[in-house]
Amino acid sequence: MKLLICTQAVDRNDPILGFFHRWIEEFAKHCGQVTVICLRTGEYSLPKNVQVYALGKGNKLTRAYRVLSLSLQRQSAYDAVFVHMNPEYLVTAGWLWRMLGKRIALWYTHKHVDIKLRIATFFADVIFTASKESFRLKSHKVHVMGHGIDTDFFTPDPNITRGDWFLSAGRLTKSKCHDLAIRMAASENKELRIAGDGPERESLELLVRELNTDVRFLGGLTQTQLRDEYRKAAHFIHTSETGSLDKVVLEALACGLPIRTNDSALKYLEHAAPELVAREHSLEKLIPKILKTLS
Image 1 (tube, one colour):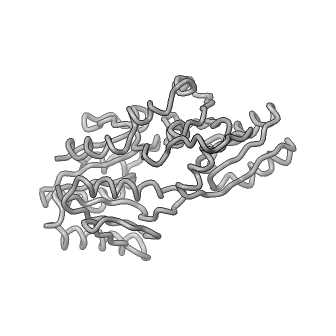
Image 2 (tube, rainbow, N blue to C red):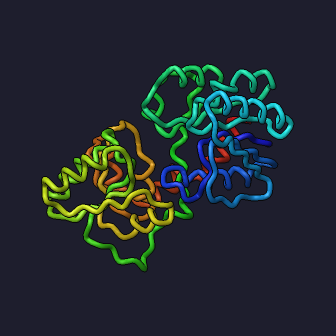
Image 3 (cartoon, rainbow, N blue to C red):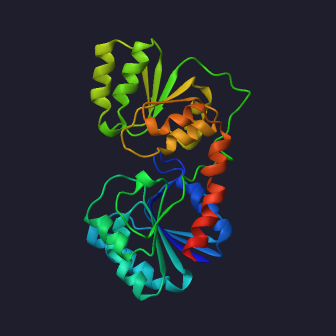
């Protein structure tokens, strides 16, 4: 298969989207040619059968024009389209890809539903999501696939001695409820390290001062830095209220980090072994399943 991938960023060091670099590498193993359209690039190193086009700066109309132009200019270079987490691409070019006879897939794992997602659902031939809670529109197009965790990268390291602190990870937003993790750590007199950044940092720092507790804000981390934190902490504290299975929980579990969660639907992970992630959520198994369904 020749594949067009549309995503937000191609940057192995991006603290939020760095993981997708490995997704592109894995797609390249199974495709004859991969074309990537993204909003921006950072550091990347991809196989020779991958070409990356950044839309660059400009307003929404300028970027939409570039997406349509590249889709037309490169139409012989792809048989199918895989849109990752950005319904806007389907709003812009879904009609064109349909006219060109391309199979279209959307990967979406978020509780948010808006008009853009509804339009994207209309144009998509198939929709992939990680869990049944990760896509909130009812559609016969939806396929629950599990998360794509790089279980060759996120692994335990028996040579690293674990510390006595807790770890929480994810964007510093209200829905992630890092404040609950802070209160839990304070009640047990444990140090808490929080990986991630976001708009709630100031209010969380204020809470730390009020409770006079030991919290380290690590900021946005690369995939390698985050893996190191998973390997060194005593427990991963999951307090998110997003209503879906967060990727960071599975990454932590894959690294052998014990999980503590306040989500009753995820309590089984507190007793799970790293092998569960390799069996049910590995990237190596996910990509071939995606391509088989999309073909």
